[in-house]
Amino acid sequence: MTDQHRVLLPRSEVSPQLQVGRRLLAAFLVLASTVLIVYLDRGGYHDNADDSVSFLDCVYYTTVTLSTTGYGDIAPASDGARIANILLVTPLRVLFLIILIGTTLEALTDRTREQWRLSRWRSQLRDHTVVVGFGTKGRSAAQTLLSTGVGRDRIVVIDPNHHVAKAANDEGYVSVAGDATRSDVLARAEVRRAKQIVIATQRDDTAVLVTLTARQLNPRLKIVAAVREEENVPLLRQSGADSVITSASAAGRLLGLSVLSPHASSVMEDLIQQGSGLSLNERPVTKAEVGRPPRECKDLVVTVVRGHRLLGYDNPEADPLQSTDRIVVIHRSSTPHPGGPTSGTDPTHGGTGGTGGPGGAGGVGFWRNERGGGR
Image (cartoon, rainbow, N blue to C red; front, side, top):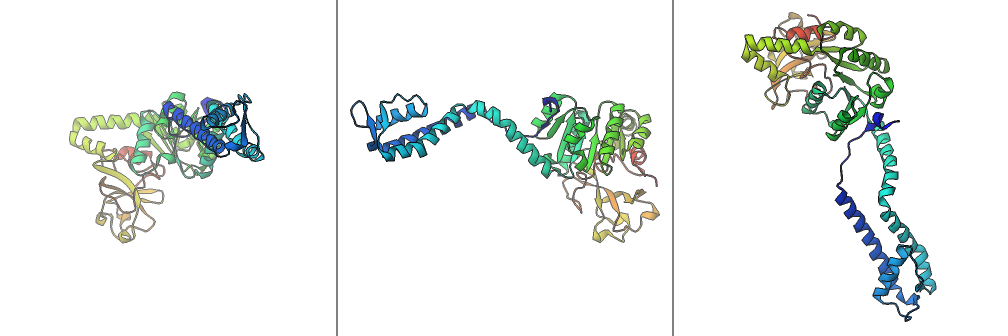
């Protein structure tokens, strides 16, 4: 596996000064421990100079022994001193040498440690979200997921640019540098065990290829894709995308709406921005809401999701609500809504996909792009 295609796990950075300080402290502790061992049994050592071993002699003997210099002027003479050298001083000497060559050893063990972290990460990862493309759209999608309670460790970023993948890794995401149209790159992101994938590539043809590859690897995967041109929406849906967002036409509609109704445009922009003001989310129907009309819910209901059908809040078929229904609601971001935030577990609804509802200014895009939609 090349460095350009390996999985990058988030890790805490330690400054070089702190690393050197830790090694110096460890070396000093080993040195002090050895001096203490020698000094406590100083009577068992022989000094060729004066036959007496002082504290300074113990320090001197320790330094030349740990550094493997070994002048031989001071040596263990008694059985106890020799046993102490075998069982204690020699292991400390090895430990001291390991600390001295710690930089080289760390380079050798770093790959093993990274392999262990990667293996542990793979064994624990389930039902996560894969974001393909960490440009403006991909980054915004990831930030929206974070704002709805999804942890960074539940998001895996794929980008063909190694520097972009490294930047995502620096922000705390697990990242893979590689071409997401290749099955081996998607496999490194554990797409087979993912719950959903957000495709935010720069080219529409790339989005189609990624969709086809992802669908082949995981037939149950929820696929949300962004395209620039509206004419490519049917192609993405035929390739297996569950939801397609047309970025160019959506931006154009917002521009036109801003000219015709600036205040409505501000509301629409507020709805698609998570974390402040109004938010658009999908959640299950609560027990208290079952059997009641959508208008009597605590939150403002925009759409009722019944199976694969989307029913407007004023559709007679939506009244009453059923226990298996899900509802798309508008609520204040600062006020928790019943059922908890679900945008993090289903990005095909809510902040990223629901720029409006039935009868709303953004409703055209929502109704057209949702697979199986239709009133």
